[in-house]
Length: 243
Image (cartoon, rainbow, N blue to C red):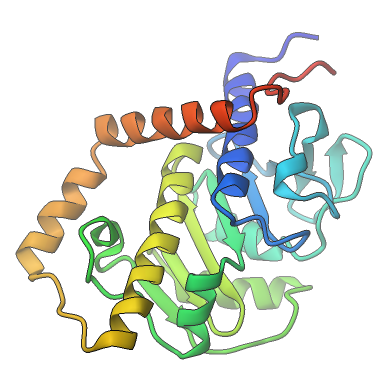
């Protein structure tokens, strides 16, 4: 059965995002989460519990409701996705969420440090990332997810103490690009901190840079480059849904 165009585009972009993030080293085994939904939807799409990012073919994707019940597909949803459902509940404009345990972002959280504006690309997160300076164990219920959503507030990203990061976006492209930028910026910040005291970007210049990086044409160009890179990296991969 032919899918409606918005759903087809969402699934098409979601599979590419999984492959891009796997290529970037952000899969985190079976512990990473990437989800997306159509605007305002009370369901979301992801890979089944136990799958890695690199295994995310279009046919493998499942749709789940906010009680983490599979509604399209047969395999189970990840039981820790209450982080996502509570953010979706709190942020109607958010259409894509990524939670990963990528090394540099995780390391910043471990030492209790937030990302600072020390790189041009990292200015994407200027005044837009917070630190959740608590650890509540595995997020298995809505209360814990709500705590993270509350601390995230209106921001683009949150670093979780001992637990990695969460990045949100109003599109799959927006969130995916931001996730790759966050890991790069965190890695550079850690290297700079090991060598001395990093100098921060001036406020006006950081805001101007952030505004440029958020322009739709810039986001689209960066997304299309990532898509081309993913396809070259894995040319025989199936990006289209057949079931």
